[in-house]
Image (cartoon, rainbow, N blue to C red):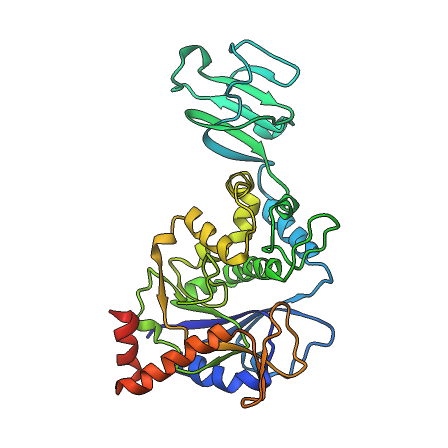
Length: 377
């Protein structure tokens, strides 16, 4: 039997409206356990049904500024790491000197490579090492330091650049709304997407430390404020090598609101902040040529960098987000429905899920047969 863990990320809200639908259409339908990975404030309601049902609870005390949470993650990730990131087949020295014996005010010539050298003993911004297989004989095994990196880096075989890690706050300079929730006097992003990035890291950290990735076959990553118009698709019939996402709300990337994962791909899906820290130069170098980043675009970019973009497939969007009267919202307030008595946060979600509900009711098929016509085949 497939063991499934459903994970609610960041917060539990709108439970007065959504819990019964969630329990029936997700937990019971998938015969799944529930995990909460959420932020809690002093007034958090521990009696809410999501909390009471959860088998696993990964809780983080919510700060006023999620920059504090990013600092915590950064320190944890860097704890046993070199201060340099290794960029293979990248030459940061190209064009800066014309002869291998040359030094300048901006280039330190460290001579011939010694296999016993410890990169962390240097303090240059970049260390460039030409290998013994470098194409030009007179540059082979040469080592250089660049105290303050200037100019471009090029792709070149058999040369490695070790570059100091870029601090996570440098990503705030890349606009526009993928780091919301972090206070910054000069480069603050709107919204709350940064909080969701942090909780992906916090979830992954706890899943690894609790050995839950090895305990469960499938992972349904979702939010608490969904009402389901149809039962969640059975994960047993969905290819476990695939990253499954609903077929809407992509915003030029991939929706961040729901995903069906497996042991094969959960790390590659969740480790966005890990890569922003441990592959910081690579990420910021590639991201700086585009503006107006949102979380959906970052997710697509990240999956591409992890070489799993080709494994993303879609399934019917059968749920929609809601907000109770006077309920909190970090982005969309929604539109009040007098008929339903609550706010529909995204009309496009409601229309999409209503379309699939109507299609199913017209089909005369069982729910599994209906999904087979849409995704399983």
